[in-house]
Length: 127
Image 1 (cartoon, one colour):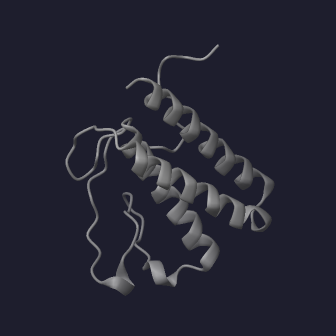
Image 2 (image 1 turned 135 degrees about the horizontal axis):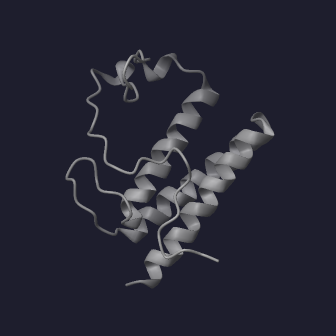
C-alpha cells in the first residue's frame, strides 16, 4: 500500500540547510557537518565529484517538485520543468557511474531515482 505522504530516500534532508558560500571557484566545498572538514571540490576525484553532484541534483529536484523548502527562500513551490531536468540529469549520472560503483551504491542511487520519479508524478498529478 502506498502512503499519501511523499516518499524520500534516507539521507534526504527534511528541513532546508541554508546556503553555503564558496570562497572561490577552486575552493567551493560541500556543506560541512559538525566536526567535518571542508574539502575543496576540485580536490575530489571524478567519481566522488559526480556522486556529490548527483546528490545536489537530487536535492534540487526535491525542491523543484515542491516537497522541500528552497534553502535560499525557505518557501515551497513547484517548478516541474526544472524538476524534470534535475531528475533527467540525475538519471544520466547514474548511467555513467553504474559500472564504476558497488552494487549497493547503484541500488541506493536507483532507489533515489525511483523515489524522485514517483513523487514527481504525484506532484504533477496534484495540480
